[in-house]
Amino acid sequence: MTTNSLTQPRVDDRQFEAVYEQYFPLLVQIASFKFSVPDSEAETLAHDVLISYLRKSRLIVELRPWLIGAICYASRHYWRLNGRILDAEAEIAADRVDPASIRILDSLPDQLAAREALECLAPRCREVLRLRYFEGWTVIEIAQRFGIKPKSAQKLISKCLRRAERLYCGKGAR
Image (tube, rainbow, N blue to C red; front, side, top):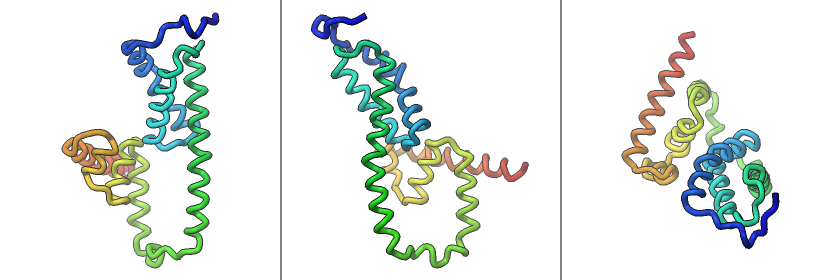
């Protein structure tokens, strides 16, 4: 069934909201799992695809296939751009000695324990703890990254820490 793009009505706010709620999780999941795009970037790509849909809604004949194709294309494009950046950074970093590697044997047991604890967590908690404790982000920066208030970010960090401890201790008790 084809319709003339000029006679097809534009999507109103309620229709867009329904499409957004129905397809946003699917688009994020496709980008994250099929293309291994980091969760925060996958959400950004899904938002971009849905905005594109809003702009081009008159031209789209079948919504679901169009959205899936668009997120696949956006994910591939993401890796084309970021793959080049990562390759260039790797070449530059290969020439430098990492100061942290000088005493790596001293910190290896702690790193292994931390990595094992993080593997037990959901992706969001894993990212929150990585940003806070490994990359040194402040609570305010984490709040801005996730679009929440600082107090909520602090609660999220605490919840994720407690969850990591419970899961890690439970894993070691087996």
